[in-house]
Each structure stands twice: as C-alpha cells, then as structure tokens.
Length: 270
Image (cartoon, rainbow, N blue to C red; front, side, top):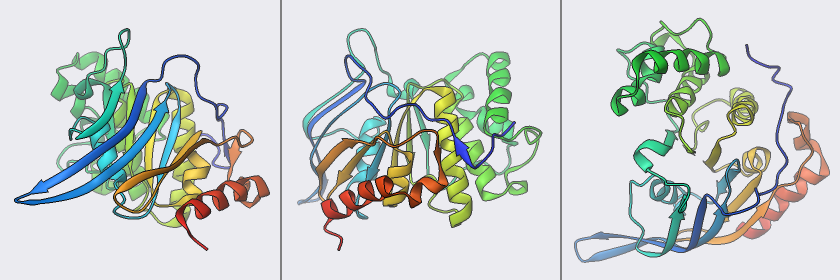
C-alpha cells in the first residue's frame, strides 16, 4: 500500500562511516570526434557512501548525464581516478547498477510485470524468485493490481513507478536516475519526490539523482553536488541537514531556502 503523500520517512543526512562506496578524484571526460575534442567533465571529486541519496544539479550541458554514464560503466573516464566498491566490496556495473531515465522506456508489448522482470531475464536470474520479488516491488511502489496491465493503461507517474521497480529487481548496490521526473507535471513530480524518498528509505540503496531543479535537489538529497556550466567542474559538495521526515511544506521554511540560495550563489544566479 502507498503511504500518505504529505510526508515521507527519511534517514539523517550524513555520510556513512568507513570507506566510501564511490570515490572520485579530479574526474575528467573528453569526447573525440575526428580531429576535434570536447571536454565534457573537467574536474569532479566526491565521496559517496552506502545509503546516501546524492543530488547532482547544474545547468544543461554541464556533464551531469555524462557523469552518470561513467558511474554506470557506459563510458570510460579519461583522467583522474574513480573507485567503486573496494577490496571487500567487488562492484560489477552490469549487475550492481539500476538505471532510471527521464522517460520510463517501458516495452509497450510487455505487461508491467514483464517490464519489471526485464533485467532479471537479461541476467538469467531465477524466474520464480524474480517474479516474487517483482510483485513485492510493485506493491512497494504503489502498483498493486497493475501487474497485468500494459504501459499505455498507466499514467506517466505510474509508468515511472514501474521503471523504478525495474531498476531494483536485480538488487543493485547503486541506483542512478537521470532527470527521472522531468517529463511529469509539477504536482505529479512533487508526489513522485515523496514516493522516491519513501522507496529509498525502504530499500536502503545508494541513489545518485541528476536534476535541473534546485529545489528538487535540496528536497531529495542527503548530499548535493553542484556542477558548473560545461565542462562540468565541482563547485561544491555538501551534506543537506534538514528536518525529517521531509514533507512538501519544508520548501516554505527558511532553512530549506538557505540551501537553495547557496546553490544559486554557486551557479551565479541572481
């Protein structure tokens, strides 16, 4: 069953002790086409610990999505260092990453249940166990009773809930989300922010979320990485210490506004 959309439980905004799950130091990415080079990411450093919810915010074209693709193992970096996992925490991007995109990207000929099961099918996971897990995830994201529906029978927000369940079906260590609610209307987007915090709190996964919305970055994150205009350079990386549980009225409070103003200042927005 879905919880109330007025507030959602949230763990304290502080990094976990010990070794970071992700360590970046002066990360750099260059795209090459013929004899030309385009510097997409120039200098990004941060530590992300297990259970963090990290918001990546910055102008369009600043390299946020590129950084996400590097974390997903889809692109190699060209400079600096990146370590994911560690000696006692082996990390396999193909198995340990779940992805959520701006559009749900559901296969229109597969039921919602079969869409959620797609990564399990690709990875060859046990069908019976995966199906049971898929039903649990559909319940968790508020889609009880919709397993046999086709994507066109669901609203945009419901389709995105299915996409989140799909990203979790193979029990990844890291969930990467690229503008997951950018295509939704404002009210649905706010409700989905609350739902995502609830899901994150229940799964205890590590999330990295790309957003263009400064308010969304502050509302969602235990930590926020602010990237400058491309090529992406780290302007700041800081913890967001706001009261919990978080609710939408938090956005009207002074302490929330202080974080928003801090990001505006970093991005040079008057």
